[in-house]
Amino acid sequence: MEYAKELEIACLAVQRASLLTKKLLDAVDKGSLDKSDATPVTIADFAAQSLIIAAIHHVFPEDDIVGEEDSKTLRVEPDLLERTWELVSTTQLQDEKSEALLYAPTSKEEMLRLIDLGAQGSCKPQGRSWVLDPVDGTASFIQNQQYGVCLGLVVDGKQKLGVTGCPNLNLESGQVHEDIVDRSGYGYQVFAVAGQGAWLRQMSTGALLVASKIEPKTQITQPEDIRFVDCRAATSSCWETHQRLAENLNASWPPRTDLWSAQLRYIAIAAGGCNVLVKIPRKASYRSKVWDHVGGMLIAEELGCIVSDLEGKPVDCSLGRTLSGCHGMIIGPSSIHARLVEAVKQLQ
Image (cartoon, rainbow, N blue to C red; front, top):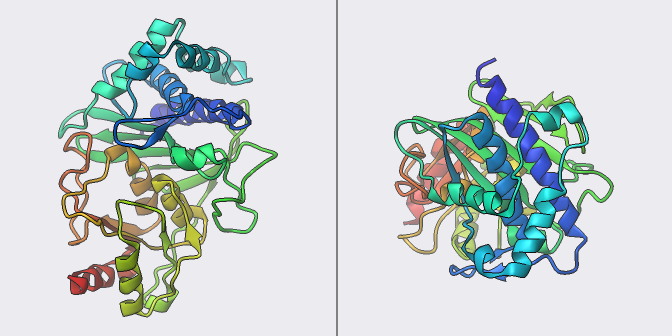
């Protein structure tokens, strides 16, 4: 199977990092602080980034790695550094064979250098770039709600692999709810390889469990069959405009699934009963970060959805650390995607 080795390492690395984040969920103080862009970050973000990069860089040392965080804060905050190192140095898979396939930093300084490998990376038109978001949805992670541990591989600007760990994901109802979490297990992992479909497995503390293939999305043609996933609290997209779109289409509103994490919205499409995601920015200049969408987009595509900007153009993943050529997004089954694009154009 193409990319078999990459997939195995990525799935193991994401599972290990997911276990790390679960260890911190019970902590009253998650070591959180605000970054310069006013978004929160915790020691789980730093620790998970270092563990994922350690595993990927050890096996694929020539590959570029694009991560959200850098080590500047840890280098000037000794207490946070110590707590981050404690998480990193005590987290490992309980299956020896699986853990032996990975690598972990052996010192605080190596941990900091690995974090900064991600800060230095940038997706380019040629070559291989791993893209990761160690904790997507940090604000909801702090509240013990839904969040993702995300890793994707982009080759020559094209997504080839995506793995999203969802440590709090509870699918007993067949939907993804922000506040209904997995309290007894370790959630699920959703992954895809280009041309090979999308898959779902429960996560564990040891070896990878057997995965089951996710059925492609039903190719709907009627707007009344649209099931949106959205986020009312999002500051970058416009809930009111999304509502007008739904009303113009005569589609159901408000969405039954409201999630803060951008990557978990793709998981809601894959496994949570939703089938359409539209992101119309409040500001014309807004562009998404590449780590908020790489991997998740591939999962949606492998299930029969089209992912585009608001004009219906494909998303280019080779333009650096942001999706700089992509204004807004429309994700939906191929059978209704063109109608969604036209409906968005009519709003303008």
